[in-house]
Image 1: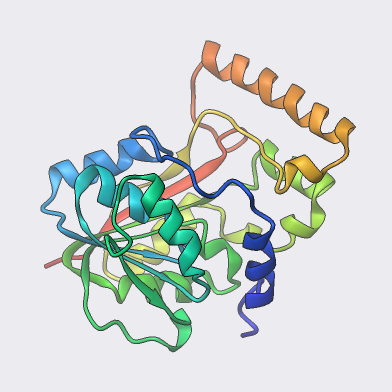
Image 2 (image 1 turned 135 degrees about the horizontal axis):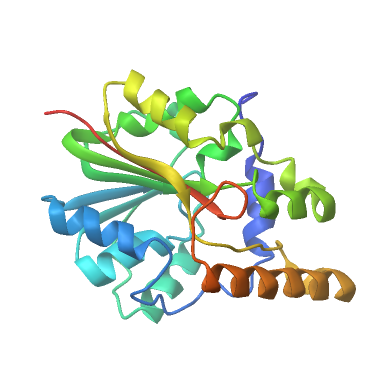
Length: 250
């Protein structure tokens, strides 16, 4: 589709290059505090992760909260997800799998929690992709979206040293106020929309990058971590992520 900044071939190649997918997901995995608040304060029993292959967050939610979890993506290589499940002490059928194109799929059910982590920024029409998320949310349920903040130092680093990856992202959508307005326009109550995390930068396929670039990235990463550990704060300039949480009315 013209709206997509990536295609299936991109994701097949992306995941086939990864050699560190079978990890034991810790209880302090990224965004664990946000998930804890949502699940502990609301009657969450079912969840669906959109665009989440190989299923890190789906497995996190199953492993630590025993939710009834579904993973939906248009590229799922089942052996990789099965290996990840086994590594985390779960049976291969512990989560439901739907392999489909989100743009050609009508939800067969709605869920208490609908999440995506690093999905919406790969589409040009941000309102459209968010509204497709909302279609999965049960009345009274919660929408939770995260995406990278490439308007921060991390984005500058990506643009200058990995332009190909940078261009696969819709930079314009990386504004909490814009995302909050889209959710509000769709009738949701926005709980939070903000920059998240004190500091981080990263490189895709870092081990395959030139050594000088790896060293530069490491130096910036260390300096940023020291600064934000001394003076911890979330900011548009340094925070690596944006998070949005919203509720659908009953």
